[in-house]
Length: 253
Image (cartoon, rainbow, N blue to C red; front, side, top):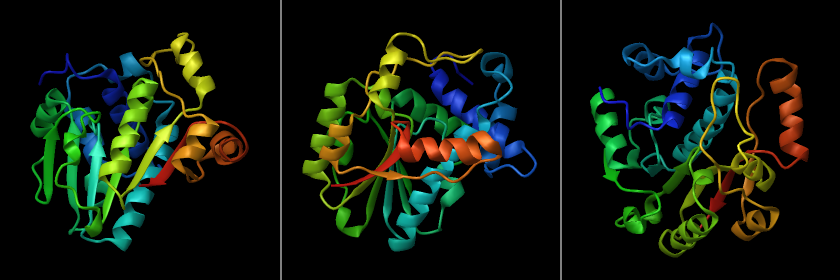
């Protein structure tokens, strides 16, 4: 199993989903994440700590899961396009038995997913960057189309994100997109190397969505579910409501 070329970000998110999924009474059920972490020969705890961010990661994941399920309730045979899916296992968590699923990711990640995860019907893969508009070919929003980008856009340059949304608006009219974004102040801290934990420093985040960009896109904030404890059950929901904080957004093209 070749992990040298796998971005640490994909392993970090996988590990923290598994940590929360293993917790008795945890917020997330994700048996494939648990299985992958147990199978993979990788020092997860040594690299990423004991999973203190597990609940926070689960809240983000559940926010996306809820939006995809909401879409499928309206479009049971609709198509979900997951950009930069990495080692995400969302399609197993929310499968309604009729949806169509498209994974768009870099060739090395597509190869790893095919090695680690079982083959599926109603699913196809596109080995390409999310920034390459060719993945939009053949998609028909008239039959229900949802695009997701979880933990992805902040790693691109601002001009790349602008070009991405311009292409989506032109070619995917009638589709919906769900994505997460950070505010510019967190982007600045990241570029200065000030966003890190005791055991892990993520790659820089060049793009943060400003208030003007949010208004231009017509992006609507999707509130996450409440977590456990005072911090994630009370303080975090207030921060999402009243301050410039990382959020999940929905836009229509």
